[in-house]
Image (cartoon, rainbow, N blue to C red):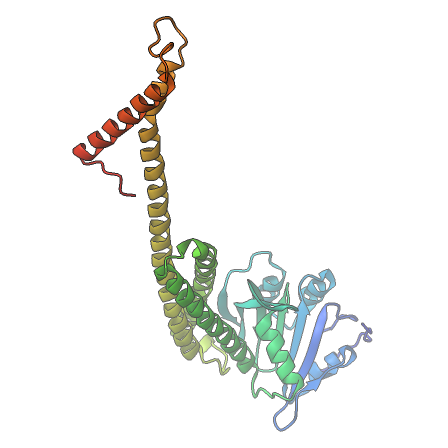
Amino acid sequence: MDSIQQQQLPGVNFVPAAIAGLIWAYRFREGYEPEAIDPRDVPAALAAEDGWLWLHFSLTDRLARDWLSSFEDLPEQVRALFLAKDEPLGLHTIDHVIFGVIADFHSELGGESDHLGRLRFALNERLVISGRRHPLRSVEEIHRAVQKGLNLPAAGRLIETIIDRFCDSVARRVAGMTDELDTAEDRVVEDMAATERVRLIEVRRMTVRVHRQLSSLGHVLRDWEERSDEADKPALPIAAERLADRLESLDHDILTLQERAKLLQDEVGARLAEETNRSLRALSILTAMLLPGSLVAGIFGMNTKDLPFLETEGGFWFAILIGAAATALFYWILRRVGAGLRI
């Protein structure tokens, strides 16, 4: 990436000469299409009096973290957020800067990913700085929309739009998992439960993972909206209450799917256990039926003196007849005591 000359601009603190790890930079102004900013023009854009900037970084780049740590326009606590190893969801304000961490799905070349990542951000009325360790789907979607001319009127609307896109992704997954459960339910009813175990495990795994993110993010937005220190909040349009309501609605849908998946798993487990019990019962009865004959065969196989039918013509068939009679007697006893042979 091209370097920029070190310079001091009015109203802007010193900007280091290189912005490593900067994935993209855009300037948004009312009445104009979004403008992609060359790294060399970032200091001048920061000093401009109209519009606002979006700087997006890769936090896996050590030089990007160095740049963020030296960007003194952000409070120290905000800069620490981009450098911290832990990524708990949260939304805070300090010195009229909103900053925090929100969830998003990873973006993969092969399609939608089920893995969840984190977007760290800080914004005021003139600037949004965001960073991630892995490409994120909602952020990439908004980036493509911005390339096509999407103009966001205020910095706060960017984060709001990202959360909305995340909710859209969750809604698509809810619809997909609903179809999966419908299919699994039909197959369980058709007595093909054994083939649905993997499908149900995947659905439950996804619902548990997404529920944690929706619940946490919903609580974060609800808590931020209901805080009493309104004077400390910057005048930025983030519809936290609307987003919290949408997240809670999606979370309710996810919990419903989770309960359905659990009930279906229990039914599949019961069906498989019943099949196993039937197989064991059949094996047990078959083993028991063979015991009398085995006993007779064992007696005639001792090869000892005075063994009956040893010299008798047709002795083998007499032994077979005794074994069959013993088996028949055992079967009659089983029926009399109520054990039965139904499998």
